[in-house]
Length: 216
Image (cartoon, rainbow, N blue to C red; front, top):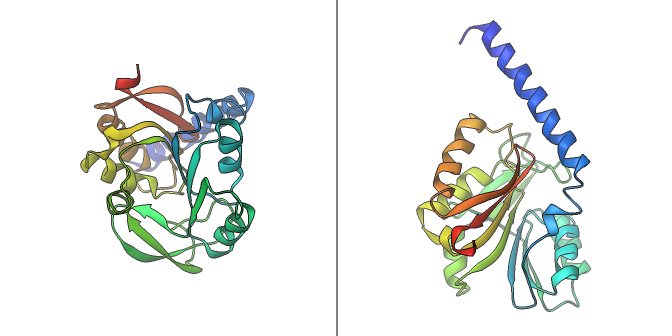
């Protein structure tokens, strides 16, 4: 691709992304779509990328559901554990779920802390998702929320290839466009998800939700 075409594409993608962000805030997606699910006190929710625990708090307050909150950064995990220390239905894990078990470096950038960009500031633990699921005897996840700053690509590929994705009712995910070949990688994952799920709402590279086809 020559320089002119590349610059044109990059500028077009920036404009499209800006439109999606504006549309998301115009629709108050954080206060509506991200909390609008068919859950109850028996539901199991995974919050991947807990940060300070606000989404966990909001989803629990609405449905009284059990929440597994995953946050690998030490300072954030400590805050979340303290915040929910008296709540027996919220379980906080200082680790991340991924496609393999390993230790990696993560950059510190508040809710944008990432293992795929920036300078590594802290070593964190990642656990192979299917191993965590089996070790904890989890048969089904009612809602899986993913905001892990680029780690979503490997994780979703893993859940699809392991076939556990068919046991997840709703997948709420934020894809990140700073990942190498992000759009192509996202489209490939969409193809994989479409075998078991369908899109209920989508704001590209902002937030989107996929619902299990058996829930139609």
